[in-house]
Length: 248
Image (tube, rainbow, N blue to C red; front, side, top):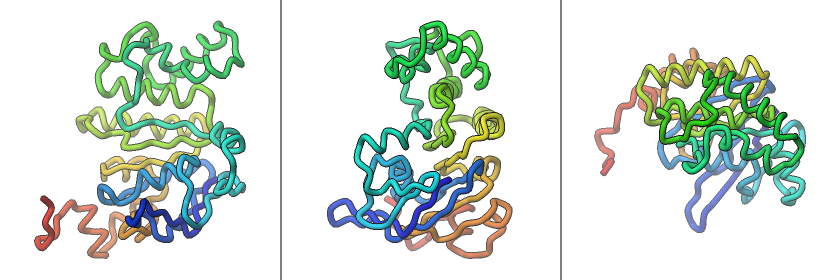
């Protein structure tokens, strides 16, 4: 479903990605891990065409999107749903208005059909009956679920998650992980999850890709990667700082 070939990206003189290769099969959950500032979110933006690489290619469902114009990219982006780190809800809108935001602007469906789709999406994320609530009335976990409902309402083929469990306690994080797996299996979507949460990476990933020094340093099923004896992989997974490194 998604293939990245020798992707390179600089911002000015700063090299962010330097020859990234990865392959994500249709229906698979892929987790991207790596240090803060290591290029994970930059890679995610390339997958949906929000950033153009300096060199290399991104393929989505067999199509090279690297040199597409904005009109062509709009067609590709219809395959994607995006779940943002902070849910990115509009505080002035109700849950229903937030979830229906994209459908309202497409003007493809009647108000009754949009209401039906909102109700179905909220049912999938275990939030039935919350249509009239405002984001301020919701917990952090509920806001994440509303963000996911907004992403799935138009039935995308690929879901991108940017740090879906950040700021949540372990119990709520586990419920979000279970929801990611359930949505993947229920809707048959391909999932790409960027996370620092190692428990989440274990739970939701078919494949885990570790970004290190601007490339994919290690990859494999969670059970293999988390059993690795490679010192760099172990240091990140175990969360152990290098004693020689100045982290301040």
